[in-house]
Image (cartoon, rainbow, N blue to C red; front, side):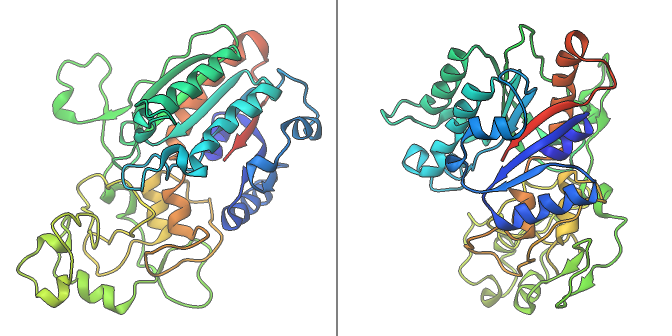
Length: 365
């Protein structure tokens, strides 16, 4: 998210993040870009917002933007959906705790679609979202919410996420219009859209990845596919998945069922990517290998100069900390963050700031 808001002209004052590899990535980016961003590696519940505000030399109401995305596993359709019974589900209300102290002019919250219907502790469908909305409204914020498709803003991925925008400066926020779409649906459009960006558009020009080694390249374009997974994906056509290919040997398909549509899944050069997930790594459209972290970054809309830190694991499964593929899958697409932050900046600049002044931002990740 901080990549997109920086591209829109904001200055990142602080990032709060508990995952050590994500913090390593954030620190390296701040050092490389010569920013003074504070990367706070801690559980956000242990951070005193009043102390942080003092450390940043801010007064209540001076912060322009408080933004971030709390963990989505409690609300994700592919997770256990424990909602508020999962302590991670309660972290979304940290926005209220910080907003109560900082009184930022704007708040931006990102979550998965399942957040909209997540039941509260009384079982009311949508109760979690409504509770967050009401608590922020009680602090004086006008709340707007919308599901945005990353593909509508030039990202080569079918990723849908909910964004909640809270405004406390007496102006109306309007979500940005799509910039990309399907050509056949634009016959009489007053503002013709660009065609969707495909997998081939963003990864087709990359050279072959580096082979697996003990010293992976800085650009993370490395092939770490285990030999067993190469054998299992062999023969699966572009855009398909192993469970569908019933002509392949049973010992190759193993115990996959027709529901396993994302396991051993090849992407297609001519289509959008499926939503990148933490559970599996998608395969290259034609090569018998996983997509590399760099290819994942291209599919997510990261700029090529951005580098990841931390391990590149070769297999899916449950791990404590986020490897590079999972860092990307867990993150906000930078182009989506950019278009939202650009609209927010328009509301802040005219009445408050000269055009040359950078805005202030705390990223709450």
